[in-house]
Figure 1 (cartoon, one colour):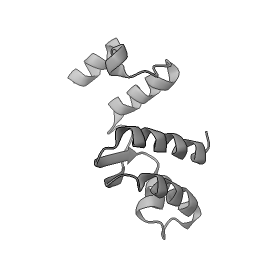
Figure 2 (cartoon, one colour):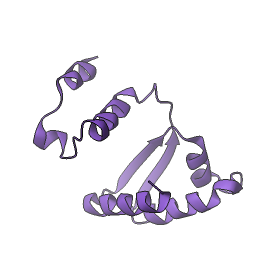
Figure 3 (cartoon, rainbow, N blue to C red):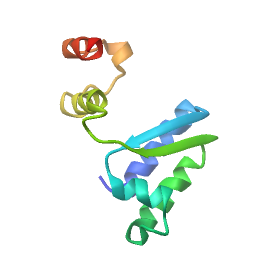
Length: 105
């Protein structure tokens, strides 16, 4: 999926939830750098500009670089959504059995 398509989908999701304070945690240093320090990441400036445009709909947001290990639970949830086609909400559909054990740790 291209970044333009991703940002359009992200824009729709953000508009639906209208949260005032959002923290995004990515494991991709290029995207985080292109947003937080665009002058230092000139090769990725266009991507950062496009994402910043989408995020401008939010009142307050922050973009952090986080390792996959630090957000392992979120990674597993995202993977289960895409690989197991769990597109409806976990709340509406019920969480998979492995998630309860993960959250208990």
